[in-house]
Image 1: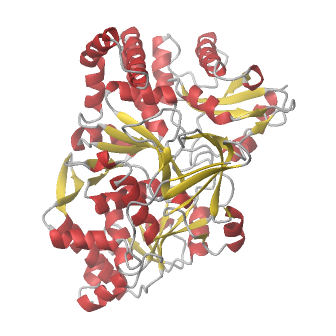
Image 2 (image 1 turned 135 degrees about the vertical axis):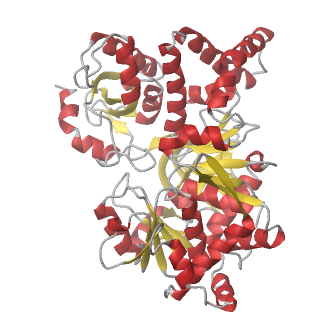
Image 3 (image 1 turned 180 degrees about the horizontal axis):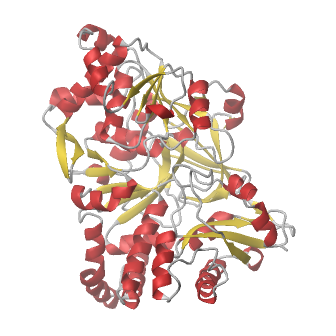
Length: 589
């Protein structure tokens, strides 16, 4: 067993709650810009004083409507400015926010509302809420503006009492797990969890992202704990916050121009693959490949004594030809990014650092209020998820440096909502059992090799971690989502879905019928040659017993609506294996 811990840098007073930073900053510098909200193609400034006033007005409405301290209020909306207003308003009224993904199925919505005991719902699409619940729409008639107006007569003294009714140990939110391994469980996260994590991770772990002029564009779902933590950190640490969405991400990046970005690996993969595809379409594929190789080599050299004179010169040339344009496509000011939710391919991390955008990878779960470990910008070791942040501890269960990853510290939740059995099973003497398998090096850096439930054991008894193989396959522009299989089978195989945009461009370049589908091209020799090369490259990283022997291209991509992806774009492996059992059997026929 190996264990590492880092002393806490920012203590959270027992009387603190999440509204303190908002109202404290509003009192000190009410005219300071805290957020920007989209206004057409522009971004209108919102001062911290204006934001606090909006939050208070909506909170008055909640109090007037009968919301009591500790009541659960569900919040179901896409990521937008009003999400932040409603979230802080619920806290200012003494309530507990229950976030729900706006893409959730009716049965998921019903389960979360029933299990949490929510007394009301703020929803962007009120029609998605089952009957029997009090619902306030975000927009339009009866929306947040009307809710605020209804509470105009609630006295200031009442609001002050409500705000102070919550303390650090009280539950701030119940966040339901994405359900990759079963029915979602409600994680009770306290005010102290969010405040302690935001201050220790941002101010003392990665302070570069919150420097002067710092800003971020938040586009991941706010029902996801990582996005929520970043929103809290912006208020706690003074970063300017804007809300965007994935369909408009490219436009939002170019108009808002953030300095810091939070994303899942798939977003970075799409940026890289899209640039490679455009270069191929313009007949500059070879130049891009050379530029990408140079960026990776330059980044790797930073960990090995620095680049040579020749590499520096080559890097300067490609900076003028390629890298500058890539940075411009990301807004031109982006210097720092954090990747979470799944493993980031090591080469991809080196590519982005080589072009001038430093991505650090962190590690955490819903139960740990997002990151408990992370790389640092000054000490970024690709392929690892870094070291514990201040106030946190990590160990690997077992006799050596590898085993189940277990954590404890200021970010770890106290319990699952109304589920004592699950809570008891999640802890080992105060250590939270993550269910992930990893190894700690002598410096305390963690490398995650997979989930304990995802480890495949072939018929020959070989243990195989599918994650690293899938990460390598996913880097190929044509590959959208791979799922490595082989549990109890004679060899390792894979299901592969194709990226629709990349496939269209590939068909045009190779003279294929534009109407041809993935199913129709499954046995096309040109497509097979591309995918064979991608599989061979992935196989080169593992032993022969772990290599993918066969693969099958599926008819379409995995989607959240079909139940194969979580809202944060992680594959629900158990659902894929169940729904594509026939395709998997065919790989072994």
